[in-house]
Image 1 (tube, one colour):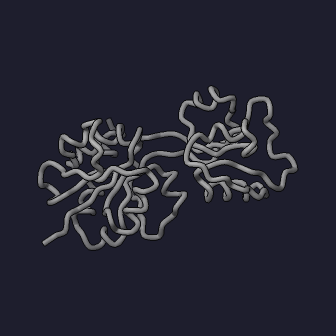
Image 2 (cartoon, helix red, strand yellow):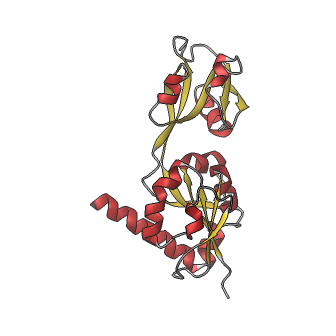
Image 3 (cartoon, one colour):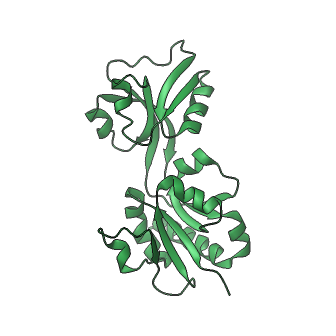
Length: 221
């Protein structure tokens, strides 16, 4: 008997864009999933096309962790998370072409100094690995102050000279007196799977092919 299939999704904007695509793929959560008052994190899925399937709703970074360690077999998460963690047991076979944004460096307006001759910078970000790699390519050692939110406050309070964060429209930066000075990575949502599960559970492969076909169909329309 096959064990239940667990599909991990992130809270927030990516999930809102992913739900219609998931529905077309046959991944339809029970009604409680849409109840804003519910504090539940695990939900049954309607239908039995993929057998016993459950949906778990967690933080984006945790989606990657659950899938990489096999606690969930399939998930959806931004490519920023895939690149930041680079788990060897994580495979991202489908670019879902949703959740578009970018990972960028930002500084206070009027204080843009470029990198100049700096050899060391303090940067606030929740992406320490991607941040260090970016500045290493520029010959700069980045001391990363790990923050999980309110990144925009860091320069004004002297915590860091600049930040590395996700940018969509740039309005949040502008509202907090910051300006985007360079882009590190273009981001979109990816379907991710556990490598071992892909080899041993044909339902995982079927989901990959279903999502791949839907993305191709959307692009051709």
